[in-house]
Amino acid sequence: MPIDTNLTTIKEAYNPKDNLFDLLRFVFAVMVIYSHSFVLLKGQGGSEDLLAKITNNQISAGSLAVNCFFVLSGFLIMQSLSSTPSISQYIKNRFLRIFPAFFVSLFLISFIIGPFLTVLPSSEYFKMNQGGPVDFIFKNITFNIFGYSWTVRDLFQENPYPGSANGSMWTLKHEVAMYMFLPLTAFFLLIKIRRLFLLLTVILSFLSVFNLLYNYKLFNLVGDTFWILSSNEYDNFIRLTPYFLIGSLLYLYRDRVVLHYRLVIFCLMLLLVGVKVGLFNIVLIVALPYTIITLAIKIRFSVFRKYGDFSYGMYIYAFPIQQLLAYKWGESLTVFSFFLLSTFGTLIAAILSWHIIEKRALKLKDFKFRRDHNKKNEKIPSL
Image 1 (cartoon, rainbow, N blue to C red):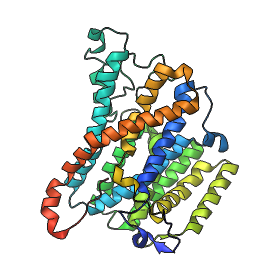
Image 2: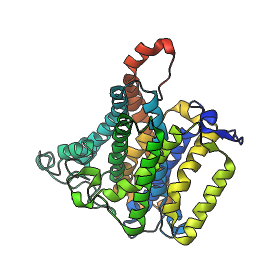
Image 3: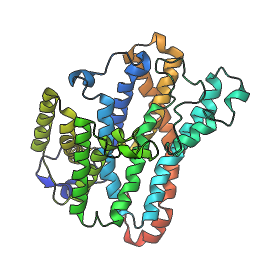
């Protein structure tokens, strides 16, 4: 795993085929499993993960991992948008990456796991009404635009963390919103005139800081009807948006941004100061994106990617698998053994999801593009 210590720009250093992106995403997925292991096994009053203790409950390992995911996603999705010949192709790519595997996971929860675990009669469980399996799939595959449905009927109601079949889904709506937002910025020339994109990123980052400091909700007047900008969702939206946009900004300014390990050390020092003064989440907005992108680009490690991209499968299957383990054997497991079993089971599910669903879906996304561009030998990123 060679590390490039030279002073270079992102454009000079970035090799799309030889980097740390895939391994980092896998690590972040494992961090989410680790963080969830405490609450899913012991309930809301259970012990906290190590990072929460170190930072005096300013952030958990799971929350940090989600922020990191959004940084990497912002960088790679901006790359994808810049490399894709049309908006329609870009939308098709995003659809095929997100929806097929997500639909299968929702279907398995609703129509395979649910019927085996419910104590309700089949006629009651499968009713076409609120709280049923179809309602669960519809509301989540549409990213809660039409309401929320966190579980199916009585599934996992007796668990230490009841009433949620897949609590990780809440981040997907915000990521999809960012997928939709980037083409809008391109349409209004904010990407072509990149100083405008920089200005937009700064404005939204300041809104995020204001929200962290003062719980200031700019869009509070819209009530509960405007999806990610509703009063229920705004906190999460404005917290995650800067990470995605700064990741995108780093790709946009790849010819100007310099990468060096000394700047990474400086960012880590800022984070330590943030922990001490109680402003960790604010410092994180500035320090995390540069640190993560520098590590992802400077450290060469292409071995992991040849086995597949399992991070998305781990994301959509980890929570229900952990809930299933807690339901069956929760009383006999320690947090550590629960974490290990959860990681192993989730990895198996993610491997199957990649080879059976995700990889096959991705083969469809640029079929026409390859046919039209074979002469140019262009490569479109798989993300």
